[in-house]
Amino acid sequence: MLFTTPVFVFVFLPLTLLGFFLAGRVSSKAGIAWLLAASLLFYSHWQPRDTLLLCASILVNFRLGLLIASSHASRAWMRCGVTLNLLLLAVFKYGDFLTGNVNQLFGTALPLPELALPIGISFFTFTQIAFLVDTYQGKVREAQPLHYGLFVTYFPHLVAGPVLHHAQMMPQFARADICRFQPAHLCGGLAIFAIGLTKKVVFADGISPYADLVFDAADSGALPTLHESWLAMCAYTLQLYFDFSGYSDMAIGLSWMFNVSLPFNFNSPYRAANISEFWRRWHISLSTFLRDYLYIVLGGNRHGPARRYLNLALTMILGGLWHGASWTFVAWGTLHGCYLMIHHGFRHLAGEAVLARLAGWRAWRFGAWLVTLLAVMVAWVLFRATNFSSAATVLQGLVGAGSAASPDPVYWNAGRSVLSGAAWCAALGLLAVVGPNSNVIGERILAWCRERPAGRSYLAGAMLVGVIGLVLVNATRDSVSAFIYFNF
Image (tube, rainbow, N blue to C red; front, side, top):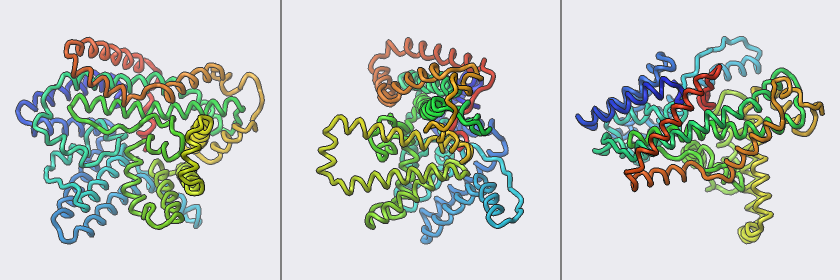
């Protein structure tokens, strides 16, 4: 049940909202129970069998949280819980990958598990690992099974994040007025949902053919031209951003409707002037998780530069592997680890005084931004490619190894042109780099809705018409594309 489909917008969402506020009139506990049941129904729509796995994971982790909080052997229980969660992830997400590599390395013929990947497993596993570690550290304590169940299954974030922390959500679920109807929240949430829907249906899906055509051709062995390779790389850079940030905006907007605030997950990442800044702006919840529960645990920057660089590399390699069971994801993470080591090494050698002077030069700031963006874009080729051969083909095209044919054959044969693709990239690129981001827009809209009750109905009506129109247009397409991060 995608956020972009009629069944979600016209059936599931209205009924869930209505039931939530009606049940909330009985008690906030009844409203929470309704929202938990709706979230489980939402998840079961994908694959009912996986709902049993999700429920079992919730029950086990909740019990482990109680044991960690009350037992003298809290460290052992925490380690047990983290291990069990990682084993669950390893079996379902990496079973085929690990078995295939063992067979290739040792010449064995072990059968592949071929287990279907439960949707959202990476997100609900990391969310619960964070809960167990925070409980062990004394940061949180949870004794309400309904609240914990909703914390994990809450449908706006369940299948593609953001990765939530217990401390961010539980105080909100415990509020006495959580089930009280708030017109400003409904209006503001609908507006942000509409922005996210536009990002996905219009921008991401609109530019995706210019990336897909070239990468699919590379999979079949065709060598794209210089123009096609650069355009495909730019198109995927923008497609991924608008697809994933669009999902995050929709999740935030949906949550506002239920009087719940989710953390912003993007902050104009393609404006970053260095790679560290990029990771403070891109997929913020995952970056924060990797920093708090992996990089710092490995030692962070507490043991000298060499250990710091090693920790950065390991963190990014494992972050790449989190995205998928493929060596291309490992290579993508490794490349970003190298970027971070180079960045921190340069800062260490240059010193703060030199960096301060450089920051005052407009040409330096522009060059730093451009180099950062190009580095990120090249890495996205590995992220998008299905294998190293396909990635190498596109990368070769970037340096002109492909045919200089005119018109460019991949686009020409599909009825598209480099010029139309370049126009898409230019328009969306300006929007991503120069335009206001949805975080700022969302906060302004919410404040406006609170300050001007008389105007809320007009804004809500306009947004509702826009949402209905986009959903209906999307439904007429030959196929409805899922969000990219649903695969992770």
